[in-house]
Length: 407
Image 1 (cartoon, one colour):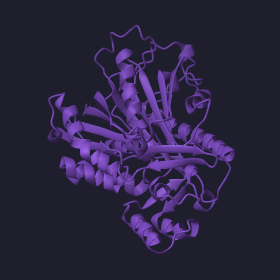
Image 2: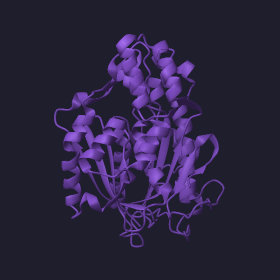
Image 3: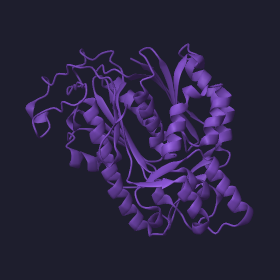
Image 4: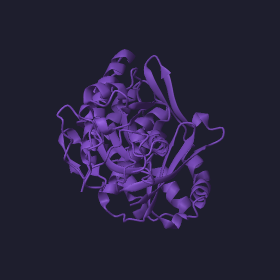
């Protein structure tokens, strides 16, 4: 079972290789305490990229994951209550929106503030400060928990990838965490801000590519999303109404290791950008903040192509979808998940963690697929040799996929 710490943080350790050694680390490269963390099975660190002999063939394995949630819970009942009190909806349209809430499959979400505070308009500069403060806090929580479960510390990380689309900050989140957590000064940084819900999957892909170039390294992926800060009370467009029903705040992290840890090993990745789909999803930045762009055609876009792109991707490895033991799917909404299941002919047991995340947390944007991955690791249902397909979808409109095999 996942372990829960303070402030709603959950983590799951990848079965990382025991017996790690820090003999190749200089004393100056150790954490300030002079000691490596002893919690978790451990991920070895190769500080010298030129010395690859020990690590050749280790690949890129997800050694640990963690999730974090803010303190305030928003239930389905609360959404029913506030919907017509916040938005000027009446008659048939109000009834239709209440039906969408009821059929969303979302029982609760989490937010950084109470709903009474969220629904009141605030100036953009105040929202931006709020985003920075809470992103740093959630990002540090989830990063510390993930590293602890992987059995390593900040100084063992060679590339730090941070992803978010629900706010904007320069310097980016990774720079803040380097100063607060004690990452090495030469850690490489990759902040990603414009890939939306696909960014968590894309970050794992970039981690794999980095470890192919620099075998033996470690990559920490951190996703922090705070969509409650994009709430627009005066916008009664269908996209904004759906957004207010669907999205929740949260953070997730994954430690991707090239040091022979056990867990899902990332074998390959693929991106597919749907032609002429720029208007399917995104944000418009206006004086009042972020306004969501969300076409009602998104589930149909995926429905029309998912079979083809999955078959092509797996076929390039001589595999069929029937050989997948897990589909780690971004829970963009109940209709999207239903359509993917129908088009691929998937039994519910292969997608259940996606439904569980949707029900308990809503759509967490880029963090969602990492939450689902966390659920799969926590379930213990996958054995060495099992294959899994991870997929997420975001603005562009783009599908990001990864093929993994459990070790």
